[in-house]
Structure formats: C-alpha cells, structure tokens
Image 1 (cartoon, one colour):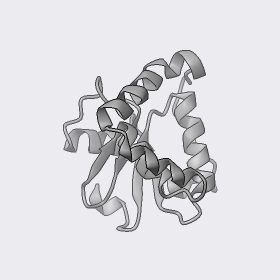
Image 2 (image 1 turned 120 degrees about the vertical axis):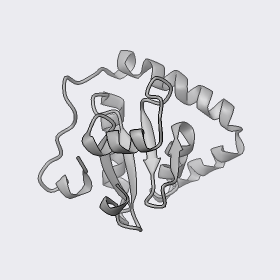
Image 3 (image 1 turned 60 degrees about the vertical axis):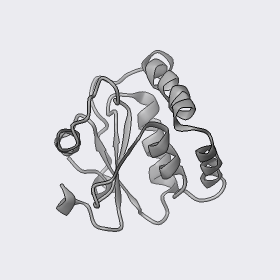
Image 4 (image 1 turned 135 degrees about the vertical axis):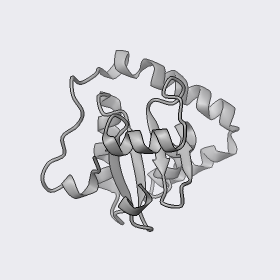
Length: 139
C-alpha cells in the first residue's frame, strides 16, 4: 500500500456510496491546488487494504480516514481538519477547531456521520471518476 502513494501525497478514504462524502470529495478535488490528495472508496480494494492493515472496525469508523505513506492514520474529525488544513484560505482556518477536545469534535462528527444517509441520501454504487480525475483515485 505504501508504494502506491508517493511520499508527498495523502490518501483520503471515503464512503463511496454516501452523497455527502461524494460532495466533500468533489470539493477537495477542486480546492486541492497543490495536488496533495489521492482518493479511494472505503469499499475499494485500496480502501480494504488500509482497513485490514490497521485493524479498523468499520462499525465504529465508516465515513472518512486520512492515510499517509508513513503509515499514519487519522480518522473522523481529526482527518477532516487535517484535510481542511491543506485546502487554502478560508477553509484552512477550520484548524482552529483542533483546540476543541477530540471527544467533543468526534461527537459532532459522529452525529453527522450517523445521519448522513438520511439527510443527503445514498448511491447504489461508488463514485466513478471522470477520465481527467482518474489519476487521483486508487482502486
């Protein structure tokens, strides 16, 4: 897995059937002007490799993970804030929420994640990237 991700990149693992997650990925793709992020659905082969390698319980973490080649893994609100930190002004200002204790940030994150299908809907299949975006997605 490590060999698939260049040292300067980070891999965002997302719920490939979630409309909210899909919108967030589309936003990150657009705002990632330094081409830091690569993407893979949690349901993909690449996503499953990371999940198995890190013994992740999908019943507790099922919406976003941020994986770096040095095998660091961030999840939930920490992953979201680390992603935001790389997206430029004004989104990068969200890092101020790192002062909020993780148990509070993750409670808010979990509430949104728990209701995401009800509020935003669910797809029948994972996102299929356009040919010009294919290089940003792993399978």
